[in-house]
Amino acid sequence: MTITEKVAYLKGLMEGLDLDKTTKEGKVLAAMADILEDMALTVADSCDQIDAIDEDLETLEEYVYDELDLDDDYDFDFDDDDSGEYEFECPNCHEVVFIDESVFEEGKEIECPNCGAKLEGFYEEEDEEDD
Image 1 (tube, rainbow, N blue to C red):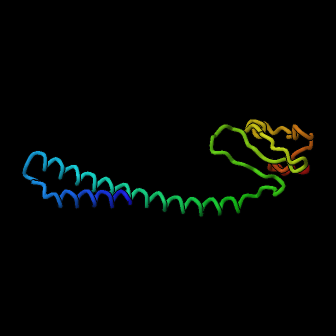
Image 2 (image 1 turned 30 degrees about the vertical axis):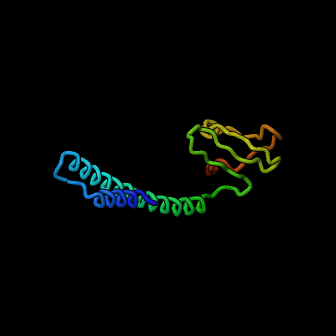
Image 3 (image 1 turned 180 degrees about the horizontal axis):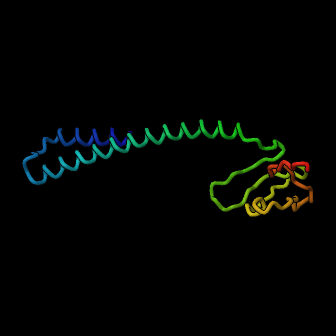
């Protein structure tokens, strides 16, 4: 039973009890039922909007990840924790490796700590002009 159905059931119970809405208690209960109904409708609308956003985000993720030009040898795991670390599987030894974001910024050569293989494909190669 959804929240809107529960509120409708509650309002039906109140009408079935034939509460006197002219008394102080009846006015309070009627006002509370109306507030609950408004809240239930707002929550239902918000859930619909969240579902629509989630579908749009899923479509966007599919588009972006399909468009990324990453070497298929690397299995990246982009964490949402903003820790500044990237996790991927070494294509040589298949060991999971964690690389700090600063390594990319400094342009250091990356080697697998497990097997020592040079890991390539992380940097944009700069075009060197001939003099």
